[in-house]
Amino acid sequence: MSTKAFVMILRKEFKDSIKSKWLIAFAITFFFLALGVPYILLGGGGFLPSDYPGMVVGTLVNLAVPLVPLVSLAMSSTTIAGERETGTIEYLLSQPATKMEVFTAKYVGLVISLTLAMLIGYGAAELMVYSSNPVFIVQFLFALGYSAMLSASAVALGFIVTVSVKGRAAAIGTGLFIWFIIVVIYDVGFLGVIAVVLDVSDYLVPLVIANPVETTRMLAFMHMADSPLRGELGPQASFLIREYGSIVVSQALTLVLLTWIIVPLVIAYAIFRRQDAA
Image (cartoon, rainbow, N blue to C red; front, side, top):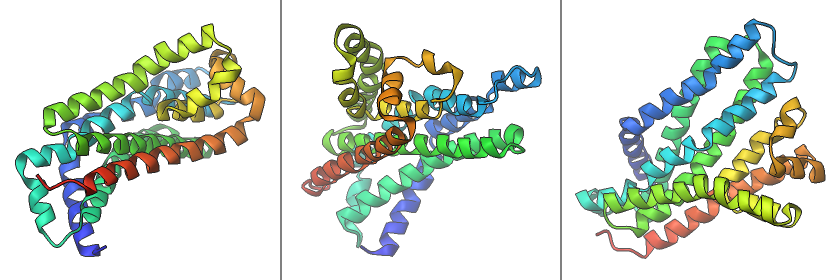
């Protein structure tokens, strides 16, 4: 792989991404989520329990879970499909750059820009409010790490869409449909029916690891394992903590989330490699 070509394409993808209105809105939204105004007010009144940093990171990631894949899928699903419409992808592939370099650089550039948006949102809020609390710094790093991994997974899924669908409109429509399935239908509908009708202990683990959104949500819940809010987390988190313990589950789900990054990315590149530039 040519380092020069890779860096050139990565830089182009990064510059294009940071100019996106999606990304700007993403960073601003994360700033207000991370600021945690209710926790600031409760803390000022002395009403927060001793384990509130864990409660904050769990709540923060839980709130961010629907937003991260939404923006990641919206941006990634159009990156190559859109450039096919404009002819940019043909220009890139006509340069001394392989398909692997183009594909990898575009993926890395997009993931870096999304992670930077989250870092700015988390970091600005943390510096304003929580910089004097080292526990919060660690918890926010966990929150950023989990959110970045979910974003990388959603981008990988979006790359399957962008190399499979022709046209920007069709690509973003497909990406948003995937978001609706994995975030709205899966969590509110599918898991709810399974939890109520079927034996949770038999189906819970496969259902959680079959969705990167649920995997990330469970990772956030692991940080709330010793919180008084544990009983309100629902059957999924309660069962996993009770059966395996928060440390083991956290490590296992992290590996699952890494798999959700690698496997879709390999599939997307296998499709892209067999295609013509047009």
